[in-house]
Image (cartoon, rainbow, N blue to C red; front, side):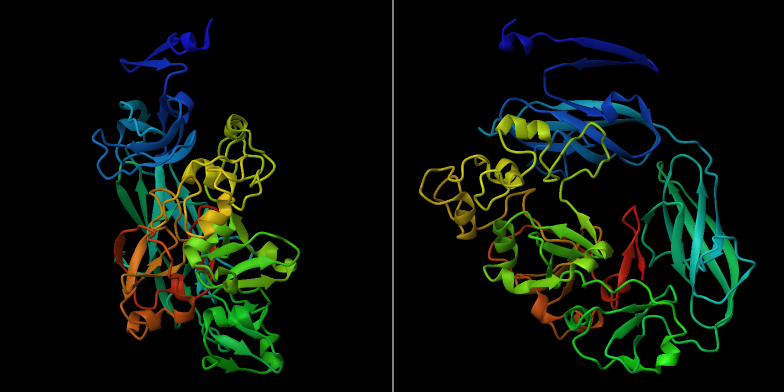
Length: 508
């Protein structure tokens, strides 16, 4: 059978579920939810996609008219969230080719089901390491909540009162860290659970906090008779600043340090080092080539290339690099953009560059080298951002390597100047303080951009310990929209955080 005849030959698979028929076509473009599963109890699903020949972009939506959705670089798989509510849910997709031809609408459905009644509860554990339920009295404000929930429950928010207006929704996990209000007294902890239908249920528990007599407030900077400065964490441990550069990523001066004796310091256990503050220095480790942007919660976002660094941070981007001792690398979690991190067993990306091995085969690029042609532009950028050739270091044959052209501000596939990052391409790392139209915005840990101020002397800027020297002023326009305002003295911004496996932040 000829190759073009294969595309005309449809292998039909029909199944019946609840009176609904499904017809899947092999070799034609498609979107499939959870590999064609009929039902799920979670809004978080994996989409599997096949586009037409020469596909370059896709547009995905839970709504048939695609309102609120944008074109993005084509991927064969993507993590997606269904709408709240029970019943059949449909995901819609359109494809765009390199010739800018837009396909018709392809769709798939899945039954989102959840028990009508939520069964939820939690217990308070003194975070002393025994993981046993508290006897009703704790001497640390830092507590652990052990959570129990029925299928279909996906988020929680926690508060010290029944007003959750200042609480953020978190992805549910087996445990959650929480901080009681200061001073001795009877405390209440409220946990509100939300299921995939959007329904909520609130549970309240009580605990008594006895503040120790030797109490020094959490979040205090401590220094004894040695040179090291420590951060007193909410976990009751002192966390050292490994060097002055890390300290000054959080604090401009030493005005807030509390001096204590060495014997007082010895009363505390020593915890993990304080990480570089998000959105400040770019980080690399001695003897290793990669450069990272620091994101909230000791997370590192790999910069794909010098070209990306130049477009985001400017031609002097290397002045932001802070080289750290290799021993500190274990305290950070490295995030590889657009890499699924093992969520999908059928997704193989040997070099963790975001390009599936099967896609590398199509382009002839290496699945063990992030920049096959060594032109200074990663395979991912060439395939999905610029549509240049990842195995040809000079895609437009003008005598300049592709990466050199991008760093110089020109397209690697033509003569046009680069003035704006295309939709779904370059973006700021989470935790970045950005200047746009003479205003300052912060990209938070959830990826939203929030307005800070118009001046670095404004109260909101100062209360979050932002520093003018770390403001990012990109040479090109990186599109984003404002999602609200940064709060005054937001602890998720201004003090060290730790991150859970689900991406939830809590005070260190």
